[in-house]
Structures are given as structure tokens and as C-alpha cells.
Amino acid sequence: MDVFPDSAYGELFVLGEAFEPRALRVTTVTASLDAHAITRGEAAPEAPLAFVRSEGALPLDILGTTWAVLLLVSDDFLRVLTANAFTGWRSYPVHVRAFEKEVLGYHGLAITGRSATPDWSRSPVVDRLPFVPGGKPYKTHVGIFITGNLWDGSDLFLPEGTSLVIVRERVADALRGAGISNVLLRRLDEFQREWAE
Image (cartoon, rainbow, N blue to C red; front, side, top):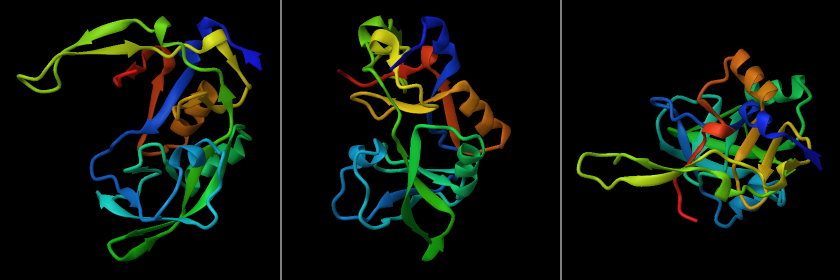
């Protein structure tokens, strides 16, 4: 395992779906699956996972899913990873349909790179205003700090015990430079954790 110093946290990003307006989102119709194991590259589907439209219409470079941890990406997205020889990932086959038609050119993204577990005690807790008027204020942890700062050196990786996809700055730059759509990249030191322990 490699070690990265605290100064590197500004050069690492959480990768996710940007929820762009009208973006196509899908849900799986596969009867039984372990979404976390598939995303973590610990299990491979025996057949292409089948997805159908859940909402939206525009097939962008990242297709969000109702399973949250399952991430579907376009041919163009994979070309960026392949052309730059980025490490820590593999793809798996999917079958996507929307509006009674097959949507071609998509793949499931599995992350094989690893780091140690996040240490949430190092993340400051910040009070946030309610999402809606009259709602309840809430607290959030700000920043992701890895226990012992250990990771396997992969360009894309998951901290143990999570399904948070983290990428190096060079991956973020390559995706942005290629104009990859519907991608959200949040620096690790700015990431807000809004779920309970």
C-alpha cells in the first residue's frame, strides 16, 4: 500500500452522477444481485445486467441508477480511462432499454482499486440549514480522510467499507478535458457526508 500525505487530499475527487436536467436514469430489472459486490469488483454478473428507464430521456456519459452504487458509463467514458491507461477499474456488460428501444454504448463500471477505511472522526461536523423552509437543520461531516492514509496507488479506488468512487486529479482532468457529461467531481476535502453512522 502507498501513502499519500494530507496535502494530497485536494488532488483526489469523489466521482458521481451530476443529475443534469433531463438526464436518463435507469433501474435494474435483474431479479437478484449484490450491487455493492458488483461495484467493488468482488462479483461479476453471470449475464449482462438489464436496465430500463426510470426517469429522464437524455443518454449522457454517466447513467445514474436507482441502486445508487451501480454506475453505468458510456463508450466515451471508457475510452478516456483506456487511452490514459488509468488503473483500478474494469467494466461489465449491461443491457439498457428506454422508450421501448435499446440504448447502445453503455457499460457497468466496477472499481478494483482500494484504500483504507475513512476516518470520519477527522472530518469536522458542520451545521447545515434545512433543505426546505420549515425543515429541520442537519449536520454533515466535511471531508474524507483515510485511516493511515493508505491506498494501493490505483487511479480509481474505493475506501474499504464504502462504495465511494475516488479518482486522482489526472482522471478528473481527463474526464473534464474530454467533455464527459453528467459527471460530478468533488474534492475529498470538500466532500459532505450527509448520512448517519
